[in-house]
Amino acid sequence: MDYRSSKSTDTITGPRSEDVLPHTAAAAVKVVIVGGFGVGKTTMVGSVSEIRPLTTEETMTEAGIGVDDNYGSESKTATTVAMDFGRISISEELVLYLFGTPGQERFWFLWNGLFEGALGAVVLIDTRRLEVSFDVIGRLEERGVPFVVAVNDFPDAPQHPVETLRKALDLDLAVPIMACDARRRESSRDVLMTLMRYLHSLTVARV
Image (cartoon, rainbow, N blue to C red):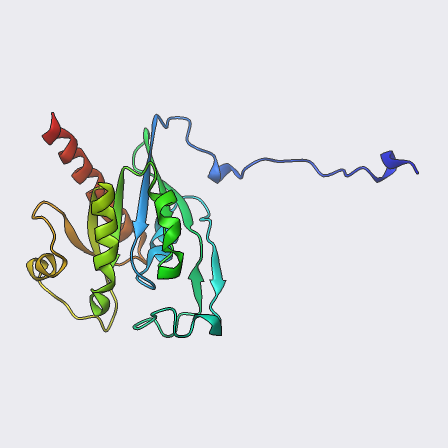
């Protein structure tokens, strides 16, 4: 058999032009987007990423009944089982790599690997289910990962003053808390810029 005749003519073209890292990029920062199930992590990564985001969503099945707490997200039919990944250029020199964590508790064992090397985090919360944020924040504090809190906008979610939320979540006065709409690129970008400013202030304070 002449294998030469069956040789593929396909060529490897490499990444799409829009996925190529800008040549001006001088620094890259890893940021994790964390939160409970259904708070909008995949949505935030997808809305703000300048490249086509990598997602690992799988269809939810009956196996999760009685195991996963989907209160407030009953209409959700898919869930992240590993991570979401995206990228955004904050400036010509600074690029953020975004890693969205799985929200269901049975996948939280993956978080340690995703936290590794992260400079900071965004904690997305849903005010209908504040209690799911306690363990999330506790894990970040245990690992010493600085974070900001973003209150995602859900139509039927109760509105609370910032100080009420700060007290309920037992947060230090320095930790930024802001409202956001994870569906909107501008809003998600504002959250990431707030995180960068917060990280900068922590660096300055140590000098």
